[in-house]
Image (tube, rainbow, N blue to C red):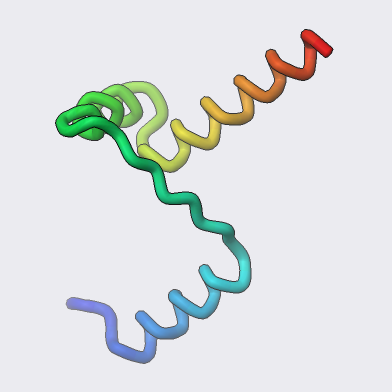
Amino acid sequence: MPASKAKIRANAKYNKNHYDRIDLRLPKGEKEVVKSHAIKHDGSLNKFLNRAINEAMERDNEKD
């Protein structure tokens, strides 16, 4: 059963108040490569991207 319009609006409002968004542009075809890798290792593209960002920042901070 699809979500009601009220549920969709409530989810959008929650997301707007609790999350920041970043638009990411990749070369054509690269999204599917990254998505497949993410699903294989983390289960979701968003989770994988968050992990990759956090690990890169940790490595960078170790250099400082």
